[in-house]
Image 1 (cartoon, helix red, strand yellow):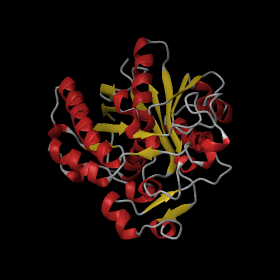
Image 2: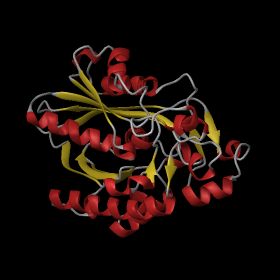
Image 3: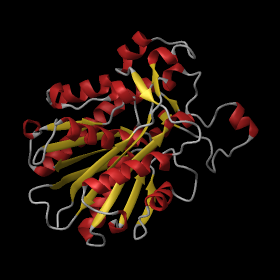
Image 4: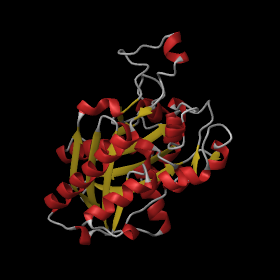
Length: 327
């Protein structure tokens, strides 16, 4: 019973923040942002909106596309590093909002790699036979942890959610997840982190006033490690499947930075035309970026049933990984 993706969905906040909008609140410009990141605009959730509010409609669309009802879902995993709250899990809130009364639900935190890690985890549950289907979601509201006075980080991120439904019912034919590889390196955790709010740096008036709850990043160091790690993960995944880059129909990389995507494609020997890029519209939506891109690629006809698709990602932790699948 090879797990396969049976349905996809996405949901983005209505509010669009352009580079020109950002230039009004921080020392930056459209030219500066586009040259360094490829981002032109991003979606920003209203303050009363939380991660489960974005995840629920994306989940409903994925469930409908898979030909299921919410009560049919057996497992829900939400990849997020901006949860509704410390607990209950965002997945539990999603379960309640979509009325998936029969599902086991939990979150997985792997920063921008959260969806890939969640998908790889769900695959193992389905392969074991414990569950026959799973709803896997990436949902983020990074606008809630940004320092809007720090132009090196606030220009990069956006909010959104994407979802897929996995099935393992023997009806996938040639479709299915062919190979998964995920990795971590905690020794470089200070390169990309949001330290406040946990037991190590508890919420205090000083922490809030000093903005220690906000995301911080060593951009140059992260860039170098990201490129190297994403390449090695992609190569490991292809090698295990006995395939080469020429066999791939579409690469869906984590939408972090167009320069990272270009470098990964170049060093892997993949034509950039085979890389799906939508960062110009949404910015870096962290764990939501790959499922949003997958749903959009299917909608635009960039990928179709039977095509080989490669996911490759990188995030804080550091975490990184790659998944190869046939739609």
